Length: 119
Length: 114
Image 1: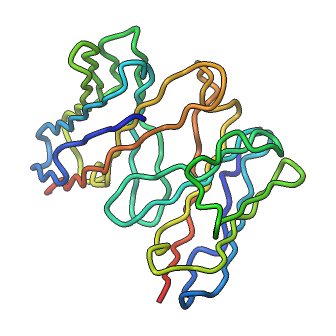
Image 2: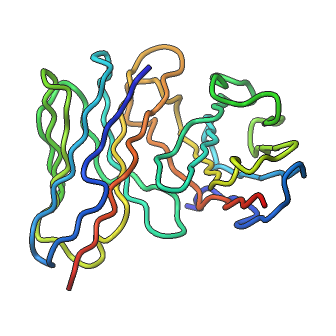
């Protein structure tokens, strides 16, 4: 089966510019996650969708970050305007069931990520 | 919120030796502990996980142990091979209704020397 697809793989922008990342989860996966992974750290959850609804966006910097999953399938994460500290790898993941469920069906499958460099 | 500490940050072993990575967590309500392997340029991949109702789980050369009282869990890789070289992350999470985030450690870069 095809994995989680992300594009672009790399992006270089200057501070205060805007950028958007795209994610296509594994077919049939209802739950989609966006993570930020700063160099030398583990992934940090930015937002979690269940179908097209937001379940958790408590760590999303809402003044500059936005995300949508309009049709409950693919998703877009946007940063506007970007800051130097936004340089990171942005990972998308999907799971069959929500993260909190005590089930073997909530394994998260990660995409390859988009490496963002803000100059 | 949950806090996960992971040690060591880097680990070098000779091929064939064992590698051990340790993590501690702060939230006593956490009951799910996965381990991920991340190779260069790729996203993390789940390699093994353990739930709080068991103390140990094995899968071929990989094993994970959990001590709920001490709130720590460890990854053990035996007979290491060069292809085991990667960054390994531990994580912790509660389960139940609603959204419970996976909290990741900072990672361990494992190098297996041929």
